[in-house]
Image (cartoon, rainbow, N blue to C red; front, side, top):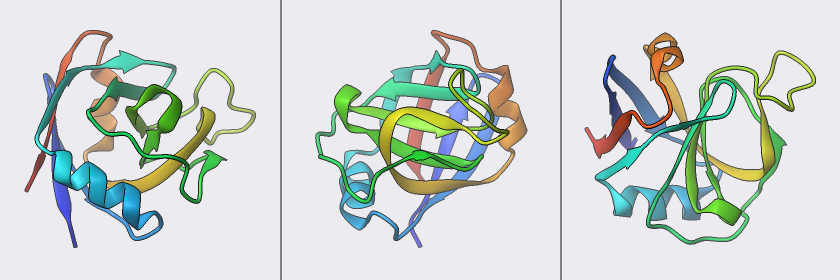
Length: 124
């Protein structure tokens, strides 16, 4: 199991990569560590990463705690609640994403992140 940690100003979140989209997970894993500035879109954090891969078993409706790659924006996305286009309590991505991981603890601290906050993703 490939595990990562996400470090933000208010603490650290642990996550793991899943087998749903193995090509995406592998490319993201190989790009770590990543440091970026967070952007908020409702209860989603996203930021550019140095990865380019197309759609892989993509979906627009995701689960709370899902981590995904958004091909049009070459972005790493973390969903922790409703987004501006959600039609239920579940998050909904702006357009289809490749889900490659899941937050496994401490998800509640993600609500504290603001636009421009530094975020670091690394292997653990």
